[in-house]
Amino acid sequence: MDVTAWLLDGDPAIRWQTRLDLLNDAEGAAADRALVESEGWGARLLDLQHEDGTWGHGVWTQRDWVGVDDALLLLALLGARGPRTAAAVDRVVAHVDWGAQWWHHPFFDGEVEPCINGRVLVAGSAFGHPSELIVERLIAEQQDDGGWNCYAQTRADPGSFHSTICALEGLTAYRDAGGPTEVAAAIDRGHGYLLERGLLRRKRDGALIDASWSAAAFPPYWRYDVLRGLDHLRAAGVRPDARLDEALDAVAAARGTDGRWRLDRVHPGETLVTMEREGEPSRWNTLRALRVLRWAGR
Image 1 (spheres, rainbow, N blue to C red):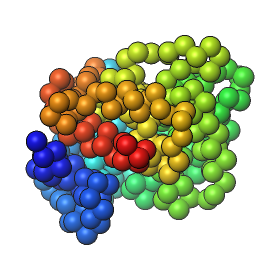
Image 2: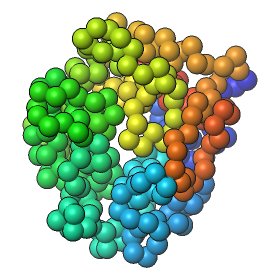
Image 3: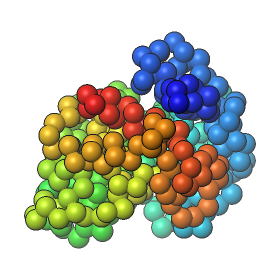
């Protein structure tokens, strides 16, 4: 089948990224991106926001509901922008903080866990509210091995892939939104953490960390998987090398005979907007896999 045509028959969030990343059509991408807040997934997500700035629950996501953190992160991943998106962000700024447990920090100043703060920084950077407080905290909390870990007690504790990918995505979004170059060293060390482990193995003994990481989910929320790691390195401008071969092989092997990738899994919990169904062909995974393989010269 014509996979590109199938992608272009999807939601505006898929169309604009397909045009930009696979077809080098910046003008067409801009036109489709302008539709994200008024059509499809982005519009439905914006429709669900309450006047208090939340999506019906608290500021942060728990197992049984989606909080402001993941709702805004999803809007950022969709590429939403325009007056409806700006109004939604303004409601968050006006009404949402992290509560007494986290000193009533404004939403975009985050709390204390790097996995949450990295995701908040992605949204803040996308929507004009990048937080230097989060950046300072993430840089100060980087582990000696270059990773991050929400449960670390000392800097010598090992990093976690889950925490590390969230922190890296946040710092890179901050950098790409015009943040100071001081974040470059922390980003480079974080990329080194991933690359030294081939995106899926322990550095100490080369053992596979988690076989389920070859199963790609979207949205990933706080969870790491191999496709997410590769797509981040691509977006961050990292030059691929032989350390990524195993991870790239895993992505290439997941391609179906029709040229598409499936949605391998859906993470547990409430879903505000059902974009795709587990086990069925996935435009998100197909788009991300194709642009990763293109970046790697495959």
